[in-house]
Image 1 (tube, helix red, strand yellow):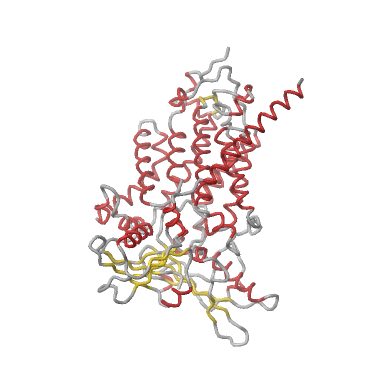
Image 2 (tube, rainbow over the protein chains, first blue to last red; image 1 turned 90 degrees about the vertical axis):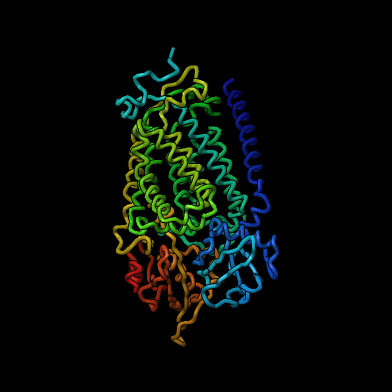
Length: 142
Length: 449
């Protein structure tokens, strides 16, 4: 009788454990909204003439890495919960023609290392909606 | 028939309740278990949802280990996913109070393993999770509103010994207190790095426009300092407790918006609210146990372990005073010291090797050795040393060790970059890892002038 009870309670516990495992499995399947993942993992490349949409995305990203409105300053590019690295590669004539190539990469690319052997890249965007702001991004990677 | 409530004489207001074995209502323990289990689940979900498991623990070919914990390695292949899945199961078991003791032990061991794999990902709240996960092994939090109490009715009780509450309070109070102590430094008192952080958040709702004003910078710096320093005494004193709870709630909610620190503010809100509210106040939230068992006494060996555990935590945060120089600059003694959100610090490093044939330093790209995001987290002398050893090991291939040099600069709280390495010609590959002061670094930005 006692062993029957033990078997019964063990069976019950196994069923409960199975349900818990199923719940845990379900939990691991839940993903962030795709846009959040995009920001987190940052594998998107924006380039050439910056569209309003791209500018807004850039703005979002810059806000997440932290930027100082209107004041050029040094920024650390390893924010976003220590996962993303934001690389901004500016064209020299950006003030006249706000062309900007923004590389959002999960890590630093060799291209950027080659293109900017120095330490600092200044990005300025003149856009009625976004401006005025300047961001001086200093990479610790070069 | 046994009472379902602790006698009035044993309310927490009573001086007798400083005695560790007096009984109090244990609803707070059940609530704590549920809140803690939820926070753990959130944390584990975060790893899955962002695939940090792969990024942090599977992809990197090299991990920066903690001194004396080099033997802690990630599982090979995709087994780290299984590890995290097991942690999720354990967290759910804790939340539900199902095989609670086993679940708490497994979670503590499993999470601490993850925590110790790579120093790059050190965060104070990961450390706190590990500590609290250890503490809850000893808390009888499965005896009310838990599946264990349902499975084994003789376990169910409405009481808990007072030491459980004080243990919880001590563990919550330590980060607050040392977080405040760490803010007692010249930079913080002159408004840095708060000035920098606030300016970056000038889009903060309602009050963001003040963030660039000096009075606001000082107000936030000093209020942060006093909140941390005075949190515990104000929470313990009945008269100030409601105010302290309200202020801490606002403080943590602001941190949610200002900083990306994940589950930490929510965790602290839950722990502080549950741990420092009078236990009697929670009593009516949960149904009383019909025939409650008496709370069991803590064995002497367990009490000794817990006391030692707390004493170590009270000593470790002071250890940076044993090292010369400014801990914010050198980072010697930084870890495990509750130096949270304290500095704006950027490290730039250039490594080079000294081939024996030429004798001239040759710059080394770090790409083959560490992931880019690991490189950006390489902040303390021990990590620089580890990477130098790793590069040398990789290039030596069984022959003579290739000398590795490093030129490292640190920007601290808006200062211009200052050399961390006192002599860039030091062969770091020949410098052993040690708990002692690294003699090859400067102690402060001023030293490197």
